[in-house]
Amino acid sequence: MPAKIFNYFIFFILSFFVLDAQASDVGKEKRWAEETVDSIMTGDAVWLKANGQKFLGIYTEPTTDIKLGGVIILHGLGVHPNWADVVQPLRTRLPDSGWFTLSLQMPILDNKADYMDYRPLFPEIAPRINAGLNFLKNKGVKNIAIIGHSMGATMAGYYVANNKRPEVRSLVAIGATGNMFKDPKLDYIQSLKKISIPVLDLSGSEDLPGVVQTKKLKAKTARQAGNKNYTQVEIKGANHFLVGKEDELVMEVEKWLRKYN
Image 1 (cartoon, rainbow, N blue to C red):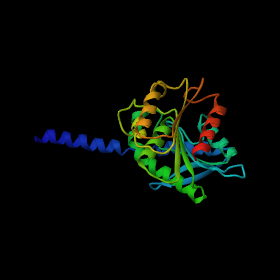
Image 2 (cartoon, rainbow, N blue to C red; image 1 turned 30 degrees about the horizontal axis):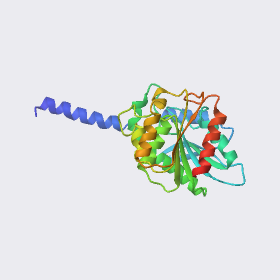
Image 3 (tube, helix red, strand yellow; image 1 turned 30 degrees about the vertical axis):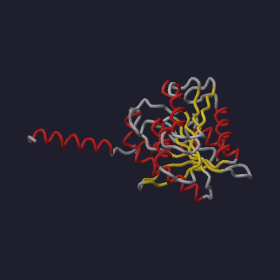
Image 4 (cartoon, helix red, strand yellow; image 1 turned 90 degrees about the horizontal axis):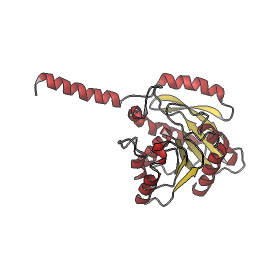
């Protein structure tokens, strides 16, 4: 191989590994944390560690005498664990029905990053979720569901498909995009092929095209995978962020959690 071509080849290979090794924007995480901690009205900020890096979680205990279990909540693209849409209603209101909640700061990039840019961050998902699971287990919680919204649903599906933790009893995917991205990490459909625990796929009737148009395919994939406890729920009139539909969101999720957890 001529030296010039060889050098281009080496450059291409090294560039691939550098891109794939991209890490979460720590500076943005810090800024989000400073803003988020001051805004917490319900629950407590907790600091967890994954891969030697400290990250924020928001922990809330049940307000009821009967404790039903715990949920780990994963936010969507580029935001934080106290995000007003979807995340905050679930993390603050499920405790009123007997659930511990732990909302995690997931890996993020700058505001210009799109969905595909997040692929290199996926190795950071499992360590963060495992840190959250261990935190809840240390609190005596052994019956846990993972709830994700949008990108958080993709991350949650990827985690459940590739990590077998017996305390994880179910998955709730809210606004999960189907197979728009031909990559096993970013493709929620590919994850469904390997998930055997109960799954609630929740979306709005006015959700994003990538969510609505793949509903039948998601159901078919789960059925072909042999998952008899896959359920789809559509909230009428709801958009991707379920704005104004928070009551229905919490009700549907809590009802389903009681059935399968």
